[in-house]
Image 1 (cartoon, helix red, strand yellow):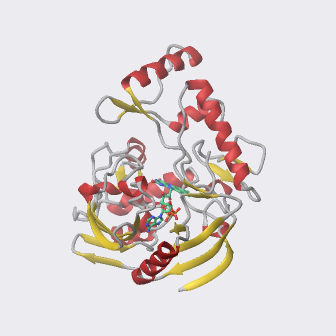
Image 2 (cartoon, protein in one colour):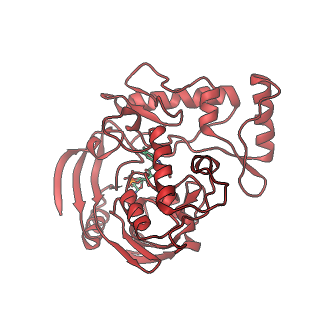
Length: 351
Ligand SMILES: Cc1cc2nc3c(=O)[nH]c(=O)nc-3n(C[C@H](O)[C@H](O)[C@H](O)COP(=O)(O)OP(=O)(O)OC[C@H]3O[C@@H](n4cnc5c(N)ncnc54)[C@H](O)[C@@H]3O)c2cc1C
């Protein structure tokens, strides 16, 4: 297992932000992962798990403890069953399933990071979420000190959430199992209106798998949502805030506030989100509160391609980023009475 001391964490994150870890380990087998976790737990050492670092905001002071990079490898496909080791690069695994002619995760192409992190916030994009295809998650349970297999029904998946995110000190994901679909080379039904439009089909239609993947990658690139080291719009964690889910009463109050502020004919985005709840768009709120693309004058700014991504323009600190995030949260709250919640995990800092 590779071991470094006082090692900078910024290069391990897509924001390129964060101070050093006291100790940095890189594990390449499940046994190494478990040994490192057990050692930290036995010695009462704080532990930070890192996959691709694409959903992490690490404080400038760094992490006083052991940071463990999970770099395990394993892509096993048997029929329509897929098992990925936690350290597999997610977007590469998606490409391989598309090449194998299997549907179910093709619209999740281009999402950075590791396979092991996908169940944590139930990653989703362009009409697909991993909760639809994951059958079980194999994890090391730090409470019982055993490896457990958690079936989908017990993962408590919801929008950008799961039982793993709810209890971050407990589970270390080792492997993720999926059931994909053999639809004779076709994608799953295209559920996202923007993707359907770009493909020239109706929502619900199926298209050749490669076309679905390539279209999603193209749409994502246009929004700075595919990593590109040359493009500061991608020095981000993707969406910095989750889309607010409001009760009927909260939505009615919000709607009234929007009309008061922006005019009677303005209808905020509204998507059904289960019993008596409505999801609205964080990007819309940010934009309409006056934080438009490219907003900011410092080293941390809103992406020039997407209002929902906060970005490091080079040379930013985590404090610069947090100052911008706090300004956006305060501005949206003042304008619309809604408090945005950050999507990435924060380490040693908070909004
Ligand atoms: C440009 C860009 C676009 C993005 N687009 C999307 C998108 O469309 N949809 C979406 O849902 N997300 C998106 N994201 C967010 C991010 O890519 C996902 O959340 C991804 O799953 C994070 O994976 P990671 O390996 O980088 O996790 P990390 O950032 O390394 O870790 C994230 C959290 O998971 C924990 N963790 C990591 N690995 C494990 C493990 N094996 N076991 C237990 N805990 C673990 C970490 O401790 C941390 O709390 C985007 C990010 C970027 C930068």
